[in-house]
Length: 323
Ligand SMILES: Nc1ncnc2c1ncn2[C@@H]1O[C@H](COP(=O)(O)OP(=O)(O)OP(=O)(O)O)[C@@H](O)[C@H]1O
Ligand SMILES: [Mg+2]
Image (cartoon, rainbow, N blue to C red; front, top):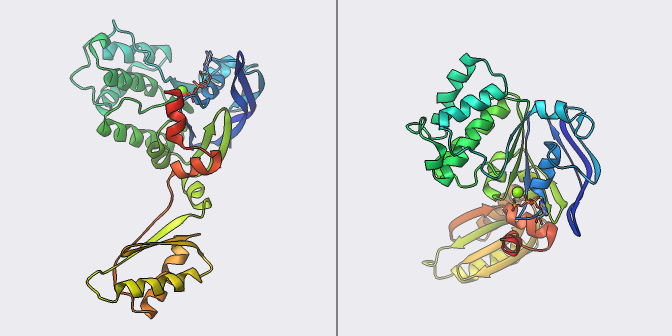
């Protein structure tokens, strides 16, 4: 069942094309990430879905409700934690949660159990009765998330949920988001972080300059590049190691799975289509040639390489242009 459906969304700000025909769908109970550098259009896309921005073209629906025709219905289905901090400096942490709980007509008993749970999850215990004006930036973000999590709507929209969080809380937040997903909540999130997309998202849309460059599960996006690396290191203690490594290079270069080999001292890097298939073949070749293996490793390219492959420029470079 599809919960979010965005079709050919377009949005311009003056001469700037922020969204250039974006389409994606999010299935119920999935964590879907919009991953892209600064200025890619992620926030614009989620603002259209949360009815805060009107698209110039295209359609967007949440659980079948159109954002332009039924904005109230759409809003009732969504919990939204925006990218910018929204806390009120004069309210305490506890007052914030009470305010949001009332806003969503949460029963008092539910509010009273969830409030300490969320404040503890986000590492705000001990600060319940302090006003948010005395909070650090990270603490304000934590409070924003706690407010967003107080009611449990069918769709949570989180714009950069871990921006400004320390490592421990970041991991706690990820686990909490997974727990929501496992209980059936659909999660749409925007992120600038490869590791967040990789760790958390069932599916990601890589977005750059208002367009979707690639879409799929992080694992599929990485393996589709067909640039896995197997690296073999020979023992320098063996006086025939250089000769053996050269022989191994010749042997593996003839294997069908192997695309390229690079020798560097005692190490041979073998670029292959799929390391799970290539690895046993490489090991067989090494055994047949009695190669003195010291270490062997394999890895798959990261989402940064996926981004580079599909857009022609690096993620970090794009971030700098906008930073
Ligand atoms: N209200 C606005 N008025 C004018 N331009 C805007 C407005 N909102 C966004 N933009 C522009 O639209 C483009 C996309 O912005 P958006 O906020 O959607 O990017 P983003 O992917 O969320 O980036 P970030 O990672 O920095 O949050 C940017 O070039 C931005 O300057
Ligand atoms: Mg943004």
